[in-house]
Amino acid sequence: MIEVETGAGCKACSIAPLDDELVRSLAYQMDLMPSEQVSREEYERRISLCAQCSSFMPRYTCLMNGAIVHILALKKKNCCPHPDKKW
Ligand code: SF4
Image (cartoon, rainbow, N blue to C red; front, top):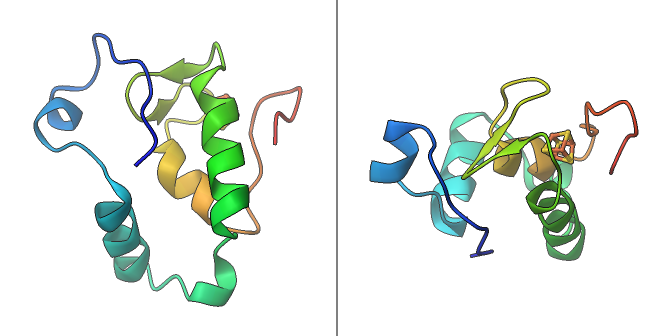
């Protein structure tokens, strides 16, 4: 699991922390095939960039589109919604 700095955030997130297993479970529920998922290295690169982004709301939300960054970053065809396209 990638650790990111935490702060005031969604109450649901604080009681149901995401970890790799939960992200994979969510991907499964979204019918996301392994071939549709980025590599582990690319996933970690994306999450690391999110963790440094001013639009990242700890612990999991992208303020640009309201998505859970772990799910957003997992899917190959997704891209960062920031105007600077951080990944
Ligand atoms: S704008 Fe991009 S880099 Fe920033 S939190 Fe959202 S997805 Fe991550």
